[in-house]
Length: 199
Image (tube, rainbow, N blue to C red; front, side, top):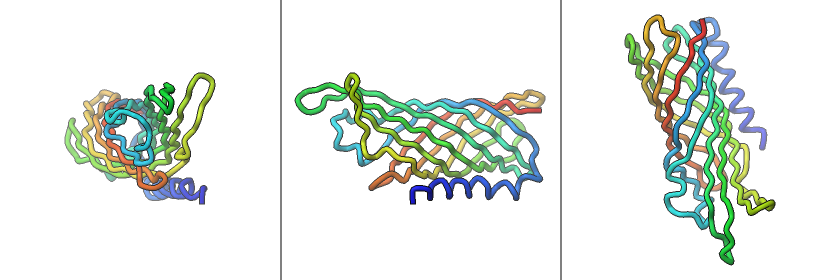
């Protein structure tokens, strides 16, 4: 059962290749960054953190874009989100609580055909490595929710591509649902970045 997320994600990525490989029009690589907002994991409710601790979290990553003739672009991305906060445990002991989310994502995006400004919408799946750690000095404790798990997301955004210019700018909103233990982990991500289109 533990290998099921890997199998599903591999199938999701490979299912696009036979259909679209003959229609590749271009490749692009780029970087992205932004914030995760309203990170909701019910399994963390028992921790002594302030209510606004999970309101915002930083995220950064890289991506590979595959363009096709059907105005559907495939995108693979590797992203890392993190947050650190000092909390007070029992007996007034202070410790650091750290959240890490490393994800490998595959997304299909449909681009509406406009000359320069191109809105898009899409959906995809990702494999997430969730790590929640409490540390005090040399002591570290990993919470039971640490796991490799599958997530699904929907995206919407706008891309700016100028003629004869290889760099494409974009802004994007994404809603993610990760299948964590118990209730699902849910959050919204706001991203911006650029893609360098290869010749």
